[in-house]
Length: 233
Image (cartoon, rainbow, N blue to C red):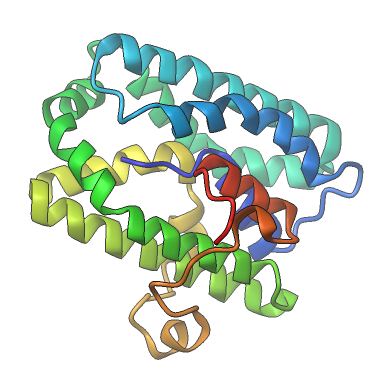
């Protein structure tokens, strides 16, 4: 399955709940994103133990880099919030990156199906990217609704594809794997935003649009574009 990387945590926190890292610039996260961006752009879904181990090494380095950024740039309250939101994802990363764990074995048993679903779900990811670009351009009070509606629409779109290709049991596996990069954000702040509700339908960009990618003026949107190799249409 494709992933957002831990930087989606910062997207949701900074864009949706208004955290501002006043001591630093979000461009500093470009350094953290570089190795993971190369991994995601140049590597297919990891299907072997060696590929998973390499993926985990890069992912853990990114987590450490972001932790250093938070320690240097965030206020004590912001650090506390980031740690709270990230804890669930870090626990899942630890399990996934432990050879022989139940999660890893379950992933390996279903990886071929998940790899096919990942390719098919690229349209879901494009719609999310367009919405990410929208989030950073709306006023503060509307960022949470747009961000959560976009994320929930992405989940619905992706997991409907996984369900059709792989079955409901694999959907649950996919949800758990997704927590490696979304952490507690959905359960904490987004559960009340049904992607099919009148509110979400009214505020979200229409599906099927092309993202601006690196042509966007937002540092967060550019980081997101870097991860998925979209330089804009």
